[in-house]
Length: 95
Image (cartoon, rainbow, N blue to C red):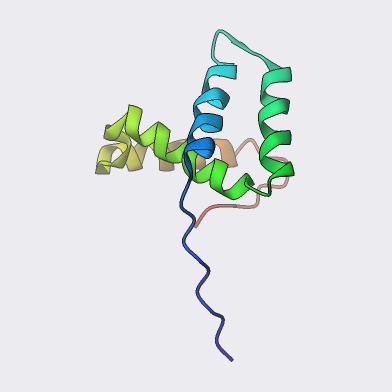
């Protein structure tokens, strides 16, 4: 039995708005937890968590296109590898 391909996850304008707002609320100068909670609650209530994450990635890559280069991907892989060493169970979650 084959599994059907899932429908493509295409963010809608509201998903992109939520993604941009999430970035604003998680500013390195200070995270506004209430704002993050409100965005996640809104996305959850609308069953749009996956679309929010895809939109967040799209916005991030749009702001910093260098992330999609080999050097950018190597940098992301470095972060994954480094953070893996800090996880309590040490189990890889990527790939």
